[in-house]
Image 1 (cartoon, rainbow, N blue to C red):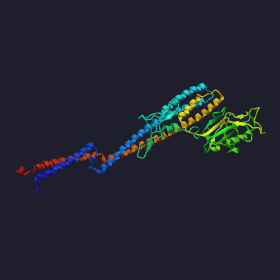
Image 2 (spheres, rainbow, N blue to C red):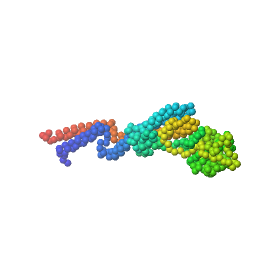
Image 3 (cartoon, rainbow, N blue to C red):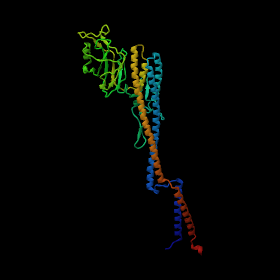
Image 4 (cartoon, rainbow, N blue to C red):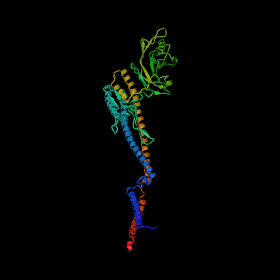
Length: 453
């Protein structure tokens, strides 16, 4: 086989250029720190790297979301701490104002502080986050949720929504609570039922808020009073209980009778009631899940009036008409806003307190306000506990995302990052090979017959 000088030159030149190309690639790897410079270098590694980079970028966005949720929930928690402190102070003022040592003038001073605290609660309920969005507006983040008009009526312009934000492929968290659920939809009374004195009461009887006893049967009950069956006005009054249809529940002997029929029997002393004992539990309501007591002296209205000189007429044909007197309602709890509760308290402080009847009405209203305020405070604490649970979820998810990101970056590094020790060794070998190729090329160029003529 004949080998020409040009063929030798071509072979040597290609070898030298190949060495230069490999050295150039290695130098570029060392410069960039990456072992995959193009997809053709490692097709599988390139595809895997793209997947990992996408997962890392998505995880970074999840971390941004978690940070935003954390900040937002922290701001909400801070606002509710302020609301809770205001409620605690208002409740202290309720207890203080309910004391008979207070005068109408001192209660007006208390009212001034209560009104300032109410303004503070309103301001906190309109708190905004770092983006200027209202925290308690639900989905209506750009709408101021609460406002009060000149008549002292509070309106809500948000909605019931709670925006969710994703912190991972499977974990989302609510970034806040709506004002409707936090400040408005709060059950009054004891949360199950509420007690109320008749607006026409003239005695000194005060009803307590009551407690749930067993299974509560919802209805609109009433406790009313009648003269003592003995006919002696010095004996305790008696009472009876009606259901929402106006039928007798207590006493049990007359259960199911209409009020009119029952009072007809009372008029001729054929029917009796339950002797009223101040502070004792009202009988018969426990079977309906209700436990209440009444203190003080209720007033009854009869015709003719019963006095020590004109007692209950005997059952000899004469009768007495029992007119509506003092009484109390027991109704299922309904929704009442925190603002309405504080406003009711403020109005009560400004109410008339000049007579025993006025003071009794004042104390009944104060008892309701205290119970309603406890419900509002309980709601705020419930929301705060949910915020705390969500913050714990956010904190744990941030840790999970950090661990996931670290693992993904380690895997990505193992695929595309350069092993510098191996690359430097390889570059030195390639450099030696290039030098050898260059020397060989120089020597081949000298292999000519003309050099020997």
